[in-house]
Structure formats: C-alpha cells, structure tokens
Image (cartoon, rainbow, N blue to C red; front, side, top):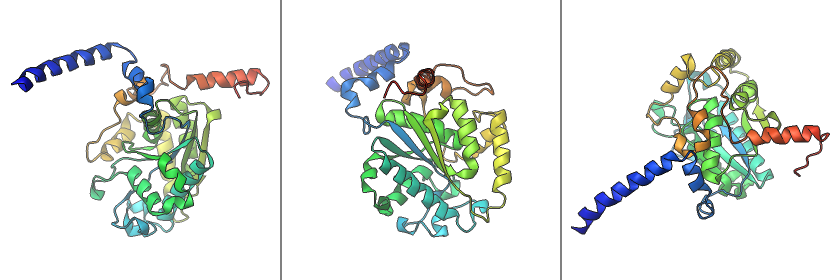
Length: 300
C-alpha cells in the first residue's frame, strides 16, 4: 500500500525536477560539473582527443583473425587487397598516438551501419580488435580507450566524438587528432573542422594511403567532398539519405542532452555556418593572444 502511495508522489516530484532543470539553460551541464559527479566520470583528467574513424564492422567470431577479409563486413568497393590491413593500421596508429600522450583519450568512432552485419558497431569492432591485438604492446592505453557508436558518416564521427569526449570527461578537448585515410584529409581538415569552427591550430590529421586497387575511391571522395561543400552539416540530399541507410537499427544520432553545450550545433541543419556559441570558442581567443604576443604562448 505504501508503495502505491509513494510511487505517484515520486513520479510527480521527478517531473517537477525535470521541468525545473529544463528551464535552466545549462542545467545538465551544471550537474555534470559538480565536483562529486566529476570524480565519477571515467576520464575526467584527460584533455586531448585522438579519434579513429571506423570504416567497417567486424563480423568474425575470433577477433584475433582481424587480418582475414571474411572477418569484416565489407562493401563491394572495399573488397580489395590491403583494405582490412588499413583498418588495423588505423587502430594501431590511434593506440600509438594515445600512448605518446598520457592526457589523450582514444576514441573509436562508428555506429551500427550495416544491416547484414547485425547490430554491431564500427566503434566497438575496432576496440575489440585492439584488445585482441594486446593494444599493440601499449596496454596502458586500454584504460583511456572508449567507443562512440552513433556516427553514420565522417562529419558525425567528429561531431559526435566531441560530444562523447564531454560525456567521458566533463569538458571538451583542448586538441583533436583524427586518424583515417589520407584521401579524406580535406574532408576532415577543411570541411568538417570548419563546420564545427574548431581552430586549425588545435587540429591534426594523420592519414594512411588507400589500397592501390581501390580504383574508384578518388572519384567517390570527390563527390562526397562536393556534397559536404554544398551541405556542410550533411542534413540534405544524398548525405542525408546515406545517413538513413547507415542506420538500419534505428539507433539515431546522439542526444543533445548528453552534451548540452552542443545542443544548437547538433540541431543545426542549414547550409550556412553555425554562428551560435561553442565550448571551444576560447581556443580561438587563445590563438589571437598568442599571435599578438609575437608567437609566445603566455598561457604555458
């Protein structure tokens, strides 16, 4: 009887609390930043993001067989010699970069993008392959390696990666390193970074060459770059259709409540540059002060 009385009261109180928090512009951010909760975050001390963009889902039963082509679900254009080796190269490079920076958080990014592969994500696939490989003799990285499992394209790799970093640390990265194919450097460095207004001075791209037999990759990349130039946030045309196809299990994008400072950016779908405030705007200010001081970093 007591339970039936208390439960409605608890639900009513919870709804009022939720409404009160909703009226506060940064309510959930304040909760995240309370000292007690910050100590509960798994990576609060980390400052820099190393993001490995996923390109395929692992479907094998033995993750030690990551060099076997049949262990991955591959699109037709990916079934060329050297493709799966490039996945391993990206994973290894990400681990090595994180190992060289004790303040780096390693993030394997990519959602459940292939219906025939089942509800397995690219991000988790890469993490488990790294685990099977013994973290390439850098086992200390394991405790700083996480996954992002919503991204459906390269722009979402970067945007959702920033949000996921906040979820894990309670703040946003002071620097970002992306690991992918060299072919995609312009897409990440010029288009996605600019769409997020992240400072170039805090951004780094590490790429590997595409396999020699991937003959159609350059033409396909040129089309994708052209699409992102027209629709930098990927919310229209073929880019949106591709996102829909790459979400066969209806996981959807990351929810803005997880990173409230990015709510406006996550909801922005125009072709024009997002002009609202962003949590890394202060990094641009830092650069301007450095420039005026004759190249000396007065914050070091």
